[in-house]
Amino acid sequence: MPQDRNARYLLVATGTGVTPYRSMLPQLRALHAERGIEAVLLFGARSPEELLYGEEFRAFAAAHPWFRFLPCFSRRLPEQPGPDDRQGYVQQSLPDLLPDPARDIAYLCGNPAMVDAAFEVLKTAGLPVPHIRREKYVSSR
Picture 1 (cartoon, one colour):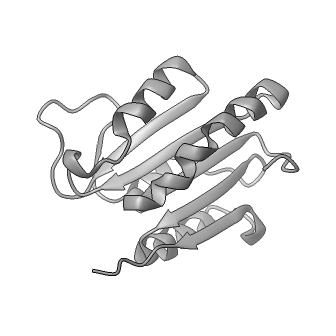
Picture 2: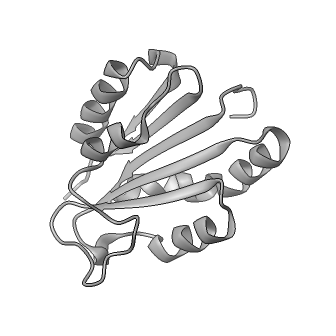
C-alpha cells in the first residue's frame, strides 16, 4: 500500500475475508495522514450475528470521517438498521460507490463467487486489472 498513489481504497469482503482489513486500519490511518486517502469497507454477511468485528469497524468509521463502513446483509438486516446498512450482496452495492479508475484501488477478499463477481463489476467500471487486488477464501466446511 505505501507505494500506491491512489486517492481511495475500496475494501470489499465477505465472512472471514474481512480479517486482513482489520489489521490494515493503522496503515490506512497513516496513509490518510500522509497523503489524504479515503477508504470504504463494504462487508458482506448473511445476518447481523455474522458481522465479524462489526462494532470495531463502526467505531473506527465514527472516529475517522475519511473511512466508511458499509455492511451488507444477504439474508437478514438488523432489527434496527443503521443508515449505512444495506440489504443484498456486496457486489450489488459496489456500483453505488462509483468506482473511479483515476482514483481507486480495490481489494477483494472472501468468498470466491463474490470475488469473481466484484472483479467483473470493477472491470466494467473501468478499473485497470492491476488496481483490483484479489484473495479468495475457501471454507473447509
